[in-house]
Image (cartoon, rainbow, N blue to C red; front, side, top):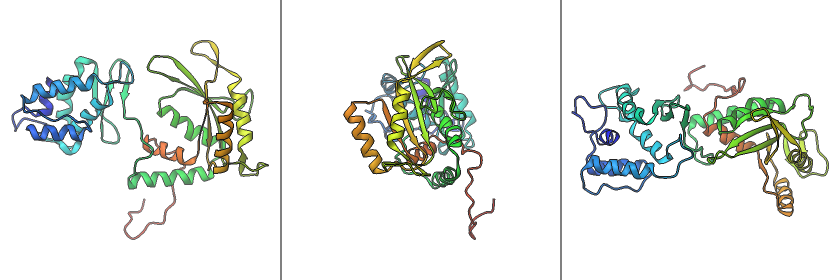
Length: 322
């Protein structure tokens, strides 16, 4: 009911940090949250409270993370552009909202992207939307993408693995992301990185990564800058057949799934060859991603660029030198 009153804006106008929303504006608010709920003309705060109960009954990733729809409601409610009687930092609104959330063990906060997120206080779990690498990019995101392209053009294979892939997979929710002897090639058994992912059921899946800097093709012989996809397939097959030691449980475990990651392009011929090979063997354990996948995921997860990934640009007359 407290959050319902906040959404309705049931406060004195001169003291409120939230917009007053009549029936039509409540419907508009929930449309902005990408839901189908429309106010039915009943008492506003009771209707909103009932709607929030329906939203909270939706499926959610785990016990410490609310449904994505509820997180969208909070982000829409706390949009800096909706500030009333205070600045865009919305300190008063945040304090009022957190008074209601604290009883359930959650805290709302603004991240560096100026959006409001929810954090579970006991576990420090942050509820963030799943990244969509196929959405349109803003001009600033396109610029970051160009800077990362310039970095990947000159980066070594070790830099690709350590400066780009490790932070990316950690950001995507994988944990215990560990290098597997990549520099000295000792006991690598075809994998550059291994990591774990915990399902909502608390079961753990192990992943391995085989990373290559250049382009993967289907040519008969590997060239200096290109790697034959058959060689990578052999290395990944070796990876899936060898155990890794997980110090968290003190046991050895097999890698369940493998990523083939290319810092360059995976050619159409290489994709076709690999697809036919996987289909013939009925393997669903091997996945692959190329430079475009890396770039798009890196941008939408809002990761800081690796050190040295600054694109040298000639300033125009309209640019401010930096």
